[in-house]
Amino acid sequence: MTTRPPARPPASPPAPSPARGKKNAGSLKARRSAARLAAVQTLYQVEIGGMTAEGALNDFTRHRLADDDGIDYVTAEVDLLAAIVRGASVRLAEIDRIVAATLDARTNLERMETLLRAILRAGSWELLAQPETHSRIIINDYVNVTHAFFAGREPGMINGVLDHVARVLRPDEVARPDPDRIPPPVM
Image (cartoon, rainbow, N blue to C red):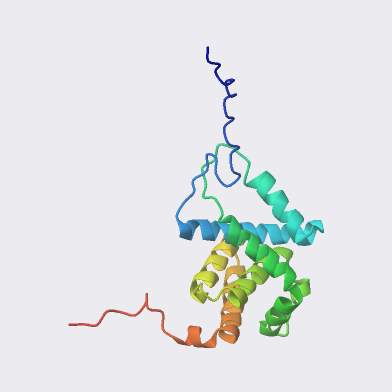
């Protein structure tokens, strides 16, 4: 008589990843744009909530990415989100010096609205530390983030400051014409 091994209990389904669920993953471009928006929100939370970067990231991934509120939206690229928040937090003093040097005499970074500071810090960190991403892409995404929160002159200010930061940090890249905007030769 042969004995059969005991039956294995059924495997439990894997826990849903906070980056998945019913949300739309979206294209890489859309996920990176969503990561930039989420990074600004997280940096804002760090400043107003007195949280550490790690605490704010944990809070964001635990609560915001895991929320299933029935809305279908693009999921943020978590690696980029974390890199921006951690990088901007670690290099905060350096980034603030770079940004402050681009502002005119009437504008003071510390008196600027917290959300605008978060946008400038996130965008400046990417311009400083992500050379593989073209500055025009970075600036455009942060101008779009600004449009999500402000309807006045703020998007133009963000565009001008980040453009100046790009010209300081990436002069060769900014000097080259954008290949997407060069008209094809006329034949």
